[in-house]
Image (tube, rainbow, N blue to C red; front, side, top):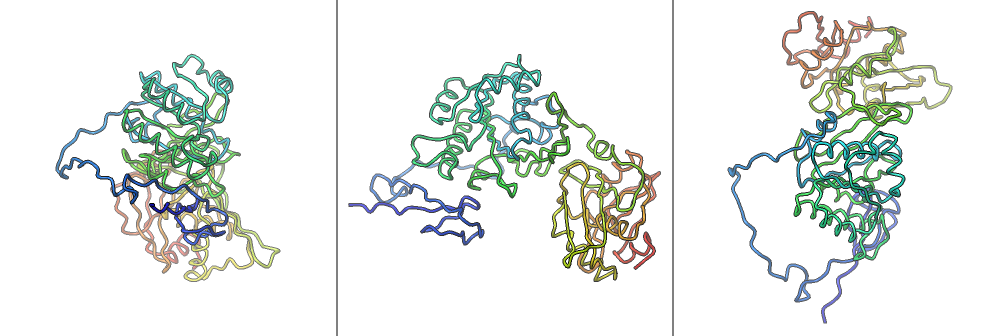
Length: 456
């Protein structure tokens, strides 16, 4: 008699597999994240799946030329930009975001836009009743959009409906609510999420239907469930934003059909999400007079230059351990910049609370913001206001040197377009001529501190 396969234990945080249950995952260190999964079924001989002989797959060479996949534009330029130019048939897209950030609103508007563009669209909600989705559609002015609506969580019924309707686009809201009756696990578990995602992705590839899956996120901001789901799909999008701001950022972190790290900017209004065609002007629209600790950073998000305001506040700390509070930037990056300022420039922040904020709710991930952050910290500490028509960008190394960053010319053009007349950047940056823009190149951080703040 063939021996039954052993059970498998999988971490819901990182997807690592273990032979037995444990309270802590050895791979990622997460606690209480390991759950049991059903083992793989065996082949006809009882020796595993590899015992069954399969068919020979067709092979091609790297020089084989194929036409690019056709795309369908939605009419929402910001969404099409993030998708790489439009929706690709038979593609699988995963959209994640915090609760209440506007994922369902965005996808309902997207479904209506694609339907008006000629696609047959089907919206399946597993979290809301059909009446609730219709109420949202009426509030958004989309009640007359030719979108088919359904409310179901049974994966078998959903696949049967999709096979009968053959839509061009199917939106599943959300993947954590789907359950398959062939899997003995609770809805939302690792096994159920992986099985549902695999079935829906396979349907998309076989039937030519584009599928958009909505995913919940954890408190760390990562999409909940096994990471293998992100590997299954073609595109992974994150819908970001702060509750206190009206701006929303749709960011591509993976895209097989376009550039990754591209962003689309939306504004949340009473009538839904409206596109922002010039994010730089919007992020700087509320900027007042020049004040200490306020610096404009010229960044790059995907292929688009974006200007944002970095704000810093430095105050004496009554605590033994001063506070380091960061919003919109990685906390480790701030600690590194403070250490370089103290070690290489002799400017201590001991006994001072430091608060750093990126205005507008945007999150900055590129190291090119280092020099702008340092300028904001020094301006707040020395109570010096930099000129309001000045932009700053550059990467700081641990030695105190300033490293050039990519696309310096595009950053300067965007700054000049918005009326800025001065720029500070690292020396040896690759840039063209910038008539009407006074550019100062700095070799290192001590030179920057001495030139701009008269210290160092």
